[in-house]
Amino acid sequence: MTFSAETKAELCRVPMERRCCRMAELYGILLCAPAFGDTGIRVSSAHAGLVRRAALLLSRVFGVEPVVARSGSRQTLRVEDAAALRGIFSGFGYDFKPSITYHLNRNVLENECCAAAFLRGAFLMAGSVAGPEKKSHLELKIGHSALSREIMSLMLDSGISPHCTERAAGSLIYLKETAGIEDFLTLIGASGAAMAIMEAKVEKSLRNRVNRQVNCETANLMKTSAASQRQIAAIEAALARGGIGIFPESLRETVDLRVAYPEASLSELAAKFSPPLSKPGLDHRLKRILKIAEQEGGSF
Image (tube, rainbow, N blue to C red; front, side):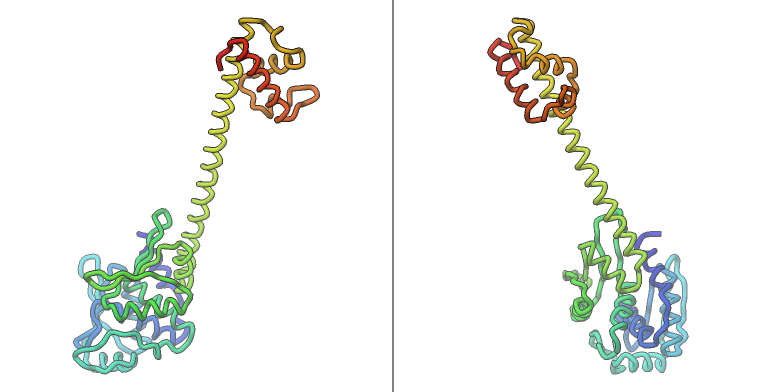
């Protein structure tokens, strides 16, 4: 099952407690359905839970028992009885005539809770969302441009900031920001899906931070190793030419420790002195040693 299907399954489990919200959710489903006109209503989907929920909402809101049929992996709900269609259209504030203008009748959304219910229905019928492992993306495919603008306005009023693009088959309302997708899913009742996306984002952020830290530490180790190799090569070349006597007595312990611990970092090497040296102090000594080695013809 895809993440979109899992999200819709979660939404189909949202309780239908208030009549106003049942009507608003049904409105969102039907307004985005393949057919919503005087000749009939048709809801078709591969998601059986959506079709069952639409049928249950029609029954509870309007007392209409639709015909549901299966064709392959898809189920289709139909309402073709003229009296039932008149009642449904009247309930949503439309005139029952051959040609209707697809628009969002805000009067149907009586209360603040109804906006979330309508958007839940619209997403169930026309929406999809990418899984947490993929690039963030949520979209609603709306067949009518005017309707898409009104749905966008409703989303904006609900604190969601979507984008819209026109396609040959209609309009595409979409969200690409993870935070916006989380807010939208939470608003319409898919808090589990929102949490899955949030957890994936946190995990990805943590993984990226760990990778950056590992890469940084690896680069530092390589830098330390390269510096140590240059120092030792220069010291050994100088010792081969003039022996330890070419270095002042104050630097000989540093020379011995550098050669004895070739893999040690500055901090580790500084701690081996008695008393321990500071990193800047050890760095200063090593620079003096390298300068002497260079004067003696050592390469580094």
